[in-house]
Image (cartoon, rainbow, N blue to C red; front, side, top):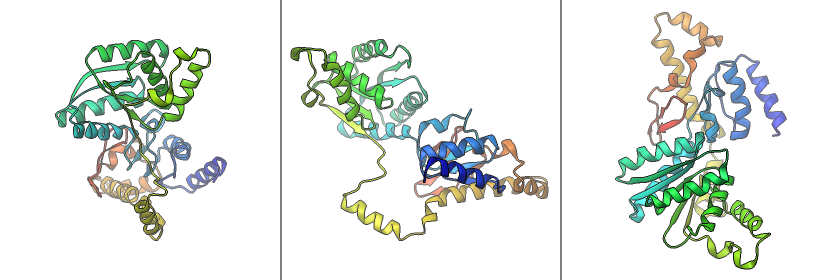
Length: 306
C-alpha cells in the first residue's frame, strides 16, 4: 500500500463515524492517521508503532500503544551490563525526546538492578560537533568506561567518529549503542579519511572494537526457529495482532460508561464521538492483563509495564 492509499483509507474510515482506531501497520503510516485522529479527538491504539515521536502529546494527544518504545533498549543494555559484571556505567544522550526518555529510563532501571550511573552527558542538537568532543572528554574523565549511547543513527555515527579520533575506542572502553549504526559509521569514517594522509586516517575494519549494538528486530529471516514461528503465526487469524488494542479500548469504553452517573447520556456521547478529553490515553489504564502482565500506560500513552 502506498502512502497515498494509506491516507485515503484513514480518511474514508474516519468519515464513517468511528469512535476508535486500531493501527496502522508501521510507524510512518501510523503517524498520518494518528495526526488525524488526535485532531478529531478519537482514541487510536497501535500494536506496531514504536517510534519515539508518538510520545509527543502536542501532536498525538489521543494516541497510545501496546508495544514498548525504542527506550526499552535501555533495559536490555543494563541487563547485558549486569550479566557481564559491569556495575558502573555512563550515559551519553542527545537532548531530544529519545535521549531524555532513554536517560530517565536508564536511571530508574539501574537503581533496581544495583547498577550505578557514574556520569551522564547530554548533547545539544545544535553545535553538535563541538558538543561531542566536550561530552566525550567529560564522561570519560568522570570515570565511565562502559558507555551507553542514546541517539539516532547519524548522531551516533558522529559520536563514534569523534571517539575514534580521541583514542577512546580500545580495550579500555565498551560502547553500548542503540540500533545498528555500522553503515553510517563507515560512511562517516570514509568522509573523514578522504583528505587525510594514510598515517592520519582511521581504519574502520580494525578501529571499531568493543561496540555492542542493541536493536528491536521484528524479522529474523533465515533463523530456523523464527521461520517455524512465522509458519505457525501465518495460520492464525490476522486480526489477532490487534487483539490487545481491541480489548484495552473496549474495556476503557466500558469503564467510562459504568462509572458514569448517567450511563445513557455517556453512551450517547461515546457513540457520536463527543467525549473529548475523556478519551485520552489515561482512560485506557484499565488493568488489562497481556502476555507479560498488567498493561499500564504513562501520560504519553507509552507502555510502561506488560
